[in-house]
Length: 449
Image (cartoon, rainbow, N blue to C red; front, side, top):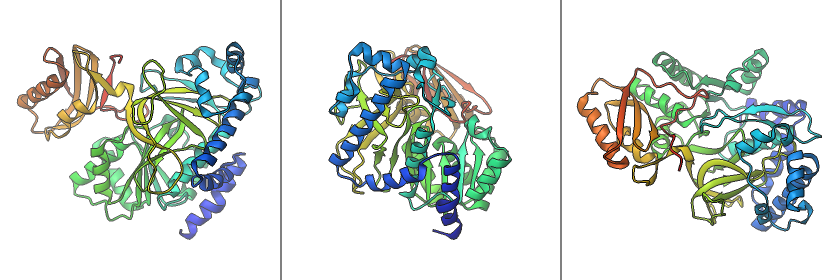
């Protein structure tokens, strides 16, 4: 660790967190220890924290106070994490309907947040300082798994209006001290891409953090320009907030000459899981309980895919208990070679809206359609939108070799998967706009599974 990094990680950042009244440092230090605990000891901690969360929610949160009363549920009597199953699921619809009743009556300093609504359901909710401290600590711990730390030079490729809207003078000074730089992920035109590549080469960051679609786009542009990125000393690229596809991981790793670490979470659900150098996704077990359910809400065993449901144990001010994320994933009972005792999330397949349904009702992941276009030299970027079982639109940026033969190949390839009777509407355009958040989604389905 260099002198500047040591100064930031050990003095400046802890001072900042203390001024914010966040317990981030102490929490991360505790997590550094608990990640190596045996399963029994870790489960005892989780049960104690769950009991505390539910007790506070039942006492101070109107929605849960009424819910527990109607169910005859006593938080003090829970004996295992499985007792969570006695409680109803929390959905975006419930949060919207309950409004202020989701807040604890003794909560102070709640910050208003919202999701981007990429699933079609934007959500407004609130986060307290306890949860912020825990989420930051969990991310900090995972960052350190890769031999980088707060204070190492970092470039963040992001697009959230929250981050991009807070670049005031204080934030600019802070970012310079922390040696982090923000690049807007939704401004991916040729001129900006040239500037991004040049800035990365000039900055020589130790790590990059951002959307896999945006970072892989930068990597592809550098390759097209003949600019090498694998000699800059980048140690790791952290990808989050979108599904990380295998071809993106490979492209990013090849371009920067370093490993790619996948992270999974969200503003609403919290910092759920992160990849370790051994290649497994470890759940932030000290804070997060993960359940996998089928379409009827039944708990699924390890190895069976279903919707990811999370309970965040640091959300007493605005509880997220059995929150349906809309994401599809799989748990596993396997142990990781890194020897950490944190449980594993085996697979994260994406959002339910990343799945498509053929004309005959077959459900398949969007990858089935992505493969049709991904390796066509005549196609640059693209987006596939399933409007209905009988109509799918393809938006694409054509290259010089694009012609009617290529378009016919696209239609034939998609119909082979969706059904011969499905209409494929191909729309060429100079640029495909990103979501408001800056993300790029390859597949969007408006058909309910």
